[in-house]
Length: 203
Image (tube, rainbow, N blue to C red; front, side, top):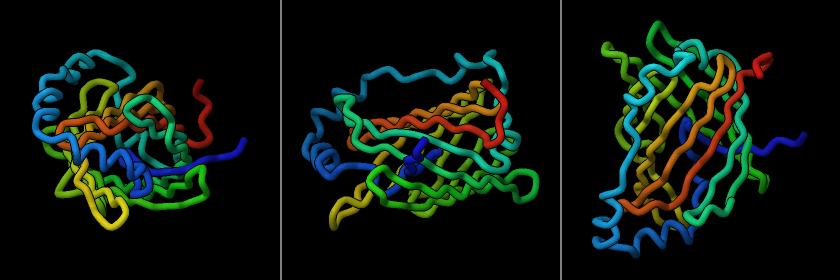
């Protein structure tokens, strides 16, 4: 099976992810669209309080992880496909470093390095080269919810795009990640990523 690579999310998204037309469309919408979208309901992470298996970030993000994903526009059309090779290491007891190497279906490559730090209250903060400030993460049950702003280059400009990022542990070796990208409150598209710990026997 061939492998297609890209970013995330991880827990995140590489600079190649958004087609130029999507970014330009968001810029043109203006205040009325922002007000329209602001009333949309969002998930409540507390709904996952009793879900299992419980997500242990230090356990899942340890060693080598394979990821396969896609970027879809607002109408659901698949714009990009990718594979990401993640090398997850630890610094001390509360810092996880994710070295993510992406390869896209069009042959391009990119890289992102995340530093994820567990806080005293069990929440998480994350930094990366193109993330503005810090990503904030809340962990409940099998679910981690991230919020962050990403600098997204398009042609000769850079746009600040908001990511609403949800990660769900399916079993001890498989995690699903879905991110919604917005600008001025208007959805630009979404990223879906399936992560698998290498040498996994889970089904």
